[in-house]
Image (tube, rainbow, N blue to C red):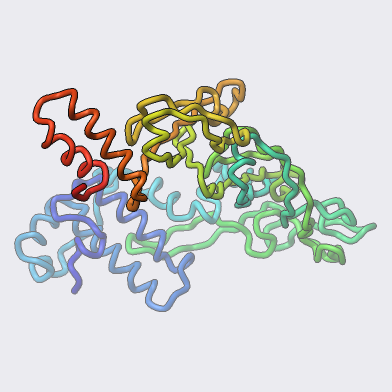
Length: 377
């Protein structure tokens, strides 16, 4: 015999509520009216036996001490009061079949049903995410059949009352469980709970009342969206059944990477390379922004890895595009690996000029040159 705790998927110190939840979940999963796989009924019975033993403190204590052999045939039915009410338990079992008689779920199943929501994944360019864009997409979804106006019946005819359930949409069925035989109210298999049958179905939709249609939609992508942003387009999901409302369409966005710009929240990050002379003397260079190329001043004496900030050149705030982040430009200073003799002479003169202004003249000249170019001068 398999370990009862393993059968229920709980630890040996699980409390009563944990045992009950595990049993409900597994019993519904393996119930023979729900699960038609071979062996499902046997598994259902094993789960019932495990809960019968572990759900009672006395039999559980015996099982913990002696295992299955210690129980013999003495394990009896759990007390209804001690176990917390099995009416609720069996309502959980058959919630997929309508639950107990008169439950709210039954009237909803027979009446109008809302159409399903749909998901559409859309990839957009970096600049489209920054400033927004109107895009056209094509989505397959269910629409109410024009020929029968959603009734499912051919024009001139209509649904008839289901003879199996008499229009109630429900039938009573006897179900055997480890705790005895119970009569449950379940959805009528002939009419699927609708209480009506279509004897002369519509030829356009085969009696379904809905048709698969590929529809073009123009959607407005607002400024400031990012990967993972979800746009809701109301009423563009699947059509509802029996006059129910239409579902919604959810568009999930994925933004392509930009080759030179990166996003960090509302800020844009970029990099520029300048020569050591530009860093020392300063310069005006052209940089790329989301608004296009602009000229930026490199201040005199810019240090390697300095960050220049361009205010209001970042990403517009979603829902408030007037508010924008900044662009942060990391400055990388490039040192030459080779220089001409004339350049070398000028740099040596410069190094000598600086070293002559301080002590230890002969050490400063070679030391500065070495730091600049990584070699002795």
